[in-house]
Length: 172
Image 1 (tube, helix red, strand yellow):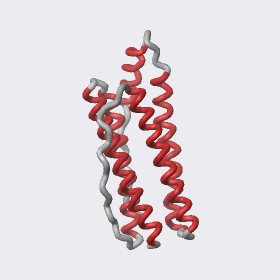
Image 2 (cartoon, one colour):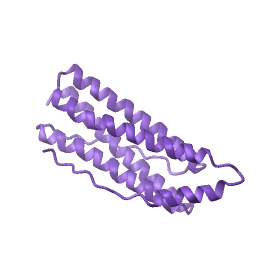
Image 3 (cartoon, rainbow, N blue to C red):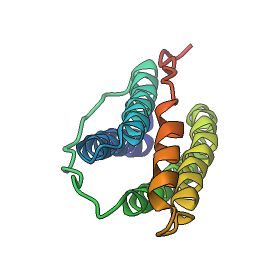
Image 4 (cartoon, rainbow, N blue to C red):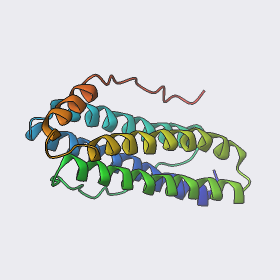
C-alpha cells in the first residue's frame, strides 16, 4: 500500500474513532439531562462512526497495510443546550467531510483507484451525516421560548425511534 495513503487512512481511522467517542460523550450528556431520545440517537451515531473506522481498518488490512492506531483526544462532555451540541456536531461533520475530501485528493494524486473507489462510499456517507446534523439543528433552532419544551420533547421522541443498522465491515 502506498505510504502516503496508508498514513492518511491511519489518521482518518483516528478521526472516525474520535467521532465515535464524541457522540458517545454527547449521548451521556443527553442522558444526564433527561433527553433519552437524544441519548439514543447519539449512541447509535457513535456505533456508526466506529463502523466507519472499522471499514477503513479492514480495507487497510485487505491491502496488506499496517494499522497504526493514534492517540484520541478526549471529547467535550458538556454543552449549554441541545442546539449548541448539534451545532458542534454539524461543525464536526463538516471537518470530517473536509478530511474525507483530502483523502480523495491524495488517492487521486497517487493514482490509487481502489482507495479512490472506497472513498466514494465515504463521500456519500458524509453528505448524509451533514444533512442529519443540519436537519436536527434546524428543528432545534425553530424552538421558541413559548413552545420550546413541548417541541423539544417531540424531537426527543422522534430521535428515540432511531435504530442501529450495523455496517458490514468485511472487504469483499
